[in-house]
Length: 498
Image (cartoon, rainbow, N blue to C red):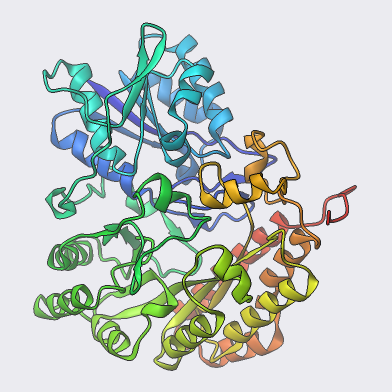
């Protein structure tokens, strides 16, 4: 039985879809954003282990043209096609499925992803999809569906939707796996790991998941804009056994010679002090600590002196920390559970101890005026310039409240959408979809442009120590130019709406 795990290269005005392992979707001109789809890669590995013939069809990472990718898919004549989707791409994926069913009528199709986890019936009505797998552990759901189609007598896993007698029917509640370390390590060769990486990471880089779901020192993360925490993880956080993660990193270093490992779990495992200590000690015991750079998503409130010392021992290099807004009122509204002062303190503590930091921001909250968005800009600039070094960077995203999140409901209830809320295609165009008293596109461009600040450039150059630092800076420049094109002014663009 042949299974194809697919990311079609559905370009938009020459821009690339940032689909894989992405919580905030956009089309971008940057060719430096190729994030490894860890859950889908886990699905591929599980399928191969059970004897299925697996085709890894990430046309986005491979840089294929839509025509060439489609020809390769049809030549493989798969029995089952699996697609991960988001609100921003779902209508395009519906069209893709309709066309696929004409060209390969016997092929079954599974849709997974955060959007369809909230709205499975919508896709069953909109296109001839056979199954919708809900929840974040869709790797196991896909395995269960493939077994079912192969004739396995076991029941379909919970959380799977399909049409029965013309009506949408569910197999029940999706039950997440309790022990993530019971899953096999990802088959990196099958999933073409070498194609992936981002501008701020050293090559070759491999991505891992230390767990699933956002954890914080105060409890599970509950940011109201985070589609994954609500659609995938049910506001919970699970971590793998720290020794298992350490040994996987050793395998990546020994087998593939990776220079950097990025933990793409929402907040890494850093928030759990006992986990971090055991992880560090295992890295030291097996002789990996200091031999590979480790970078991770991280919350600022997890950056404490005791954790910093452990991370230094383990070999951490970069932390990706979300600021989102420079205003405490906004952080409270979006349930960030951090203050601006706490975030500034955490970022500066990380930099004081030699870590590079990537700070992420959001612009275009409908309640933020000129003074508030300038405050975000000023805080972002302060953090970028503080002890700047190669690898430090900023990211700016326009606020996109994804359907199903608490933020979407909050904005919908107040009539703050500037588009029809069901116009999903507009959710990925790097343009505002909610009313704002300022121009979010202008401010996103300004924040990206902080990388051009002469003080940042001079301080970064002064701290260059190797040709690899220069390589990182060059890739960062290429990526910056692409992102600036994403937020270029549009002709005839309308003025901000108060």
